[in-house]
Image (tube, rainbow, N blue to C red; front, side, top):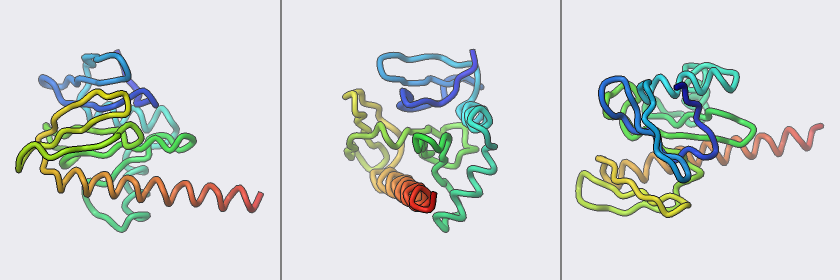
Length: 153
């Protein structure tokens, strides 16, 4: 089964070798693709490449690593990585679905989604805070650009 990131996606978590556990609104799926492959395929599905989306985010944010990815731009569907996107333990989180996050300990953070589901990610609170801040900045800039474009038309 192929999977594309959607508005229902909460998180994409690496499972066993080359498989992912995908959390959606009320479901969990095991997908026979790595989280990174899901990201690549999702970007292509919505008309771009992962590398194109990554380079855009890098330019817009002035960031070099762990940049959020604007998978689909009509709905500003932005996901962010918890570590290097190429790392086997990288989890992808959907920005618009995050309601809050809480420190568990120095190396673990609980993410609470807007449907009250929770996951614990093996990242510091500060890392998650930074990633949400970056993704939110990307979201803000892209929304602002759309408004400016609409004013010109």
